[in-house]
Length: 341
Image (cartoon, rainbow, N blue to C red):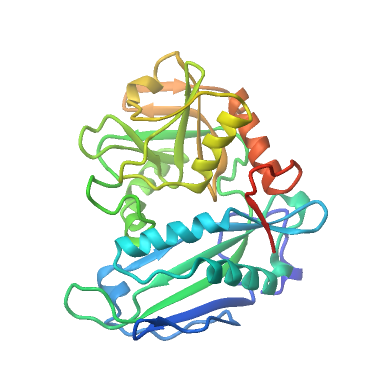
């Protein structure tokens, strides 16, 4: 698509084809030299491991335009490390971190015309994807792999923007079980969430909140983001015990809350019962796509807790302003999180 035809001020979170992608192939135990190629389809064997057994992982990142016109990435080395952790869990080859960041810069620069303006609130979403594309019959890892990095200009993940959303907790569906692949960003984790999310959206909610698979009591994740609550003034998020994704935005929020706002932070089990008590004053979800999105209300069967009329809570707003300010270089990056393209 010609970037001149895009209304960057009205973008949703939908696929728009850009100009260039990055591809590297792994064969005979080695990665090829990656290269930029035109965005296009490619052939894959019907017996590819990713098609038959779901051997695929991915990451989600954003390139942002600053007020001065610079292009920034947010903590890309963390995405590289998480990609490799997911790869190891799925018996896939790791990719060199420095080469990964170099590839990110190359593909972002090649698609620079698709980066939304600073004042649009949009971003160039970056999707690194690794698949087992080698043919295989028995349940075992592929012998050949492909790393692909493509980009898409996007607006807010939730149409509401930085406004509160209504969520529904589920005691029927769970996202991941102990000992499984919940902490890996593997494609199959997301396929299983599609039906629960469709059902909860049909009832008028923006997203679902999953509870743990063992007790159906402790909050794990929002459908596509990590969960946070402010309880008795403490910033709390579910602990990463193998069943939730170790979010990079999540990690950053904990640091910002503690070091910039002086908040006590905790990573622990959060019973859904705590959310319906008065000591829980704010809740929000966070991730690369969601950024920080306030939660207006939470429903579980006949229980409903309303946190606001849509306006973000005090701590939610402060964390949002800090995070986005650093990401767009409106606030000094004292953590060394920003990488310029």
